Amino acid sequence: MSKLIIDRREFLRYLGISTVSILGHQLLSACAPLFSGQPTNEPFGEPDVEVQLFAKTDLQQIFPGNPTKVWRYQGEVIKGSSDALRFLPDSYLGPIFQVNKGMHVRVHFTNDLPETTIIHWHGLHVPESADGHPRLAIENGETYVYDFKVMDRAGTYWYHPHPHGRTGPQVYQGLAGLFLIHDDEETSLSLPSNEKDLPLVIQDRYFDSDNQLVYDPSVMGMFGNRILVNGIPDFKFEVDRAAYRLRLMNGSNARIYKLAWDDGSPLHVIGTEGGLLEQPLIRDYITLAPAQRVELWVDFGLWDSGDIINLISLTEAGDAVDFPIFSAVINNSDRLVTSLPDQLTIHDPLNASQAVNANNPRVFEMQMGMGMRWMFNGRVFEMMDVARNEKVRLDDIEIWEFYNPGRSGMGMPGMIQPHPIHIHGLQFKILERQVDSSSVISYSNLKDGFVDEGWHDTVLVVPGERVRLLMQFKDFNGLYLYHCHNLEHEDMGMMRNYQVLSA
Ligand code: C2O
Ligand code: CU
Ligand code: CU
Image (cartoon, rainbow, N blue to C red; front, side):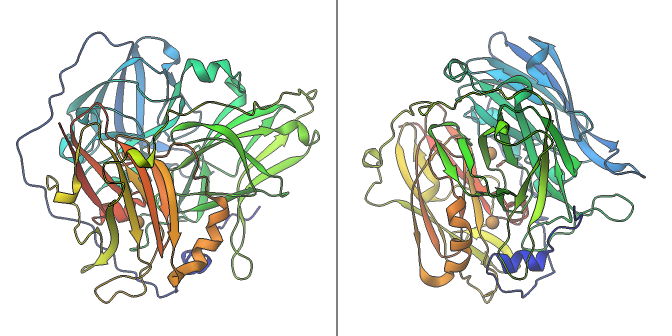
């Protein structure tokens, strides 16, 4: 299997983007002003699960030879079932949280890094005090206590750092972990579980000849030369001839994947970022942007013992190459036949006609501005600033339109890129996509792999596209974020606050 994956230029070509390469990059260096108005973070009641987490520097044996310097989350359960954390062997990734809906979770997070940090629980509907906004970042030696109730549906969520201007490098060095939620509805479906329920975190990283991570992003983001799955290169695992649940997460900083089986078998999708779909769907490939998750149901009994089936990332024919993600080796167990239910769940209804701005959606236009800073509606991230179009009312249902013009202002015509847009604190529905003629190439290269059904917290918006989302602001007031989840774009300013205000 080839070790080297596509380089940046090939990647741009595959997206239908000009190869004008812009090597300079600029991270935000301005320090946030101090402010008043920290959300109160009073622990409430007795938690069902209590965890101590640390972020620390460490060494990890990833390749033969020198170990790699990494940053990692380390944790232990201090109250509740010891199953609440699961540890991935030989991985720099953080422990996997395994909790049930309704549980009260308390996490004591201690920063043992040489710089400030804070944890964000990606996809979870939590109070602002638990959302990990960069204004809450803590210094080395300090501890932040998160206290929240698990309100979300069963599914694959995750956690990662969110400090001002440093999210990209911190995640890149290894700080990330999964947060899995289970609920009764999911249990009643008897989906493949335990050793047949596999979390697979896909990341690309650039390693030098000494096995060390190199972080040298361009305005396009940071792209690697190796693929890791659960922190391991050339990832391979053995499977029975039976059905499995694969939870795929794109934990990369910037890379978008087109995931497919190398023998062309169709993919059966059962879940997205916000949990199970109502009905399973079939795709020939799946477009998975940074921060997105997709759950597959795979019957490995369809292959023969001894077969090896590879998940690959497809690129377009011509000048680029497909590259492997992981390999599943079919063992010689007896075939176990199970079927996938055709109705998985029923989603709470949310109708566009209920939106308070149904006739006049908020529009967030993505742009590249002076000094190579990515922006929304002409503004980069400002720690405490909330523009007029970023204030919403508690309980309102709204439509938000994200517009990627496929061109950019201020003399940067080459800088067009797809943007994976993420909104904190909620899961949304994707209402519609409208594409103009300015960049049909990247759209047609990716569109058949979109899974727009179901609940999402991250959506890919390609150049020339307007994507309309439907969401409701429930339960919590406060300051939340929306941003591009290309982490370099986020750090370069492509993030803004939105504020939920009481009616
Ligand atoms: Cu995973 Cu603010 O993001
Ligand atoms: Cu998030
Ligand atoms: Cu972006």
